[in-house]
Amino acid sequence: MKKLYQKGWFGIKFSEFAKLDSENIADDKFYEKFYELFYKKFDSYNDLPKDYIECKTNIAKDIINFSKDYKDILSIGCGNGFIENFIIKNSDKNILAIEPSNNFKWLTNAETCKTIIGFFPECIKDERKYEFGYCSTIDYVFNNEEYINFFKSVYDYGFKDFYLAEVIVPSEGFVASTKEIIKDVLSLFGLYNKGQFWGYLRNIDEHIALLKKVGFKKITYGTHKHGSYWIRLENEKN
Image (tube, rainbow, N blue to C red; front, side, top):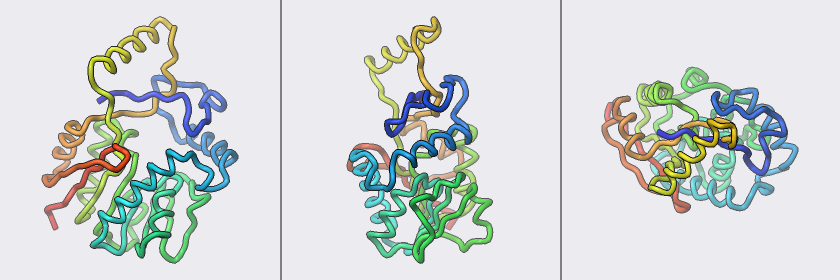
């Protein structure tokens, strides 16, 4: 597992609204301030960077394919909702989209998409049971204990199929490792600002080891068109 640091996102410098903290992970207030600037900078999904649109479109197409045997699907941690918006506009799926913060400026409730603010699984205790679910780019926010606890809730919920989409793994090899060591040393002497502590990156073997600890036995993985990984979890309790 490798710590991840960032100084900006979507062309927005974190230093514009916060003091960068390389020790403590970004909290709810940080994200709230960030999204205030995000929605001032962008007016719609079409305004987002082309590489972001291409990446998220690839993921959305894969989710449509992965869920071909299911009409109703659950999205955990949908963010700004780009993927969910693409799915409901390009398939006959019904989506329940969960997001901890009120980040539904562009993804609004419609006949085929319901949004809920809250945390899985507590926020959907009164909802119908879903057999297919997915999360995209949320694994990085968890330390190992939090990771296990979250996916234990996924396991206990009893999805037949669950996907971790857009799993980003750390760069490996001599050059990447050397660069990280140099940054760490410079940082110790106050000569380099790592940026905001953003989360954790794990390689595929680390993901699988943690998911096996949770209880999943049938685990497969592959890559999206743009190169990031997906991991499929099939719950053998069903």
